[in-house]
Amino acid sequence: MPSFSNTVLLTLGAVNGAHAWGVLGHATVAYVAQHYVSSEAASWAQGVLGNSSSSYLAGIASWADQYRLTSAGKWSAPLHFIDAEDNPPSSCNVDYDRDCGSSGCSISAVANYTQRVSDSSLSDDDVAEALRFLVHFIGDMTQPLHDEAYEVGGNNIKVTFNGYSDNLHSDWDTYIPEQLVGGDSLSDAQSWATTLVKEIESGNYTSQAASWIKGDDISDPIAAATSWASDANALVCTVVMPNGAAALQTGDLYPTYYDSVIDTIELQIAKGGYRLGNWLNKIYSSKIAKRDLESFAKVGRAATSQPDLSGRSFLPDPRPLSRAKLARAAMDGSCCNSGRHNH
Ligand SMILES: *[C@@H]1O[C@H](CO)[C@@H](O)[C@H](O)[C@H]1NC(C)=O
Ligand SMILES: *[C@@H]1O[C@H](CO)[C@@H](O)[C@H](O)[C@H]1NC(C)=O
Ligand SMILES: *[C@@H]1O[C@H](CO)[C@@H](O)[C@H](O)[C@H]1NC(C)=O
Ligand SMILES: [Zn+2]
Ligand SMILES: [Zn+2]
Image (cartoon, rainbow, N blue to C red; front, side, top):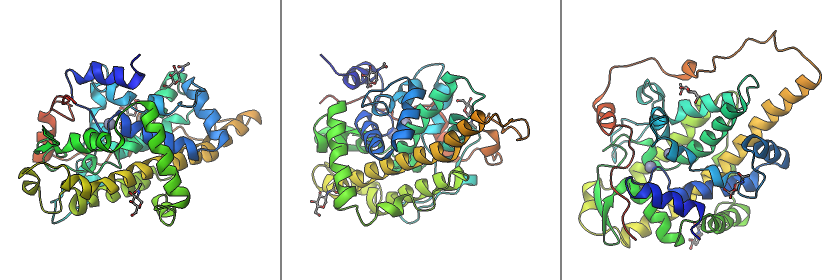
């Protein structure tokens, strides 16, 4: 019997490429996060999602990629990335005001859904949607090509990987991780996550894990998300295309290029999970637990002013469309324009 994730891939894969870390990457980020959420935060998240299984986050981690493909969800496509209009490989940087378009981006989305997930005036469905989006976007942000405008995040860089013609973006999202792990089912993700958690607990990542969440402050989600995007964007210059894009188009990316990037891909997935777990703990402890306490004590909400739940207040001032934003718009909301290659 095909697993849930395989069914999704088969269904969507026929017409569309994979979006953002593929199903494997997002589910792995989610399982790593599940390891780090407190039991109170986990119960809260399970209640919000109506799922108390041991895959409550992993099972919904790619929902946002399916949703963006529907006509009802097309509006959400820009939220999967931020188009840093920098100049790789010579200079990489994220500038929120410059790079986040007027329809929003991953950074504004993290702020919007951090606010919405804990607002008790929203419906259960809206709160669940906010959590599904957060789980996905915090993962997306650690994929360097989701923080890069160059060639539409690498979607327009045609390359060959292990004999298949595809593009650099989908290799990073999907094919390179799958080459490492050997599958994309939830159990593949779970065992990859187990490996990464071990590296965090007592391995390659132990000395650096604290730095991945350093300064993350729930009261300033734009700053936290901008630091995550900047961290991954820097890797575009140093790891993704240190010698420029043309250097990646002279032969098969497997095995030499694969060998040069695979440690970074593992690191980024681990970071995404660790950050997501920490962020959910912060949401729980500084918003949900407090809110529940207040409502228990019947402290009125009337005195506190209501936030703008449309998320508009998080957006930078509008600017004229740049060339990079026009190129992105020309993709019509799509992230990956190549069909899923046939493994
Ligand atoms: C909970 O999530 C798991 C993993 O995605 C899924 O298999 C299961 O059907 C879900 N349960 C409910 C009640 O939705
Ligand atoms: C951890 O480090 C070892 C030795 O450098 C390396 O072989 C292994 O692939 C690393 N694991 C991860 C998950 O990066
Ligand atoms: C905030 O989230 C809501 C619900 O998904 C959405 O309608 C709105 O457009 C979002 N705002 C921004 C600025 O992304
Ligand atoms: Zn992608
Ligand atoms: Zn995505």
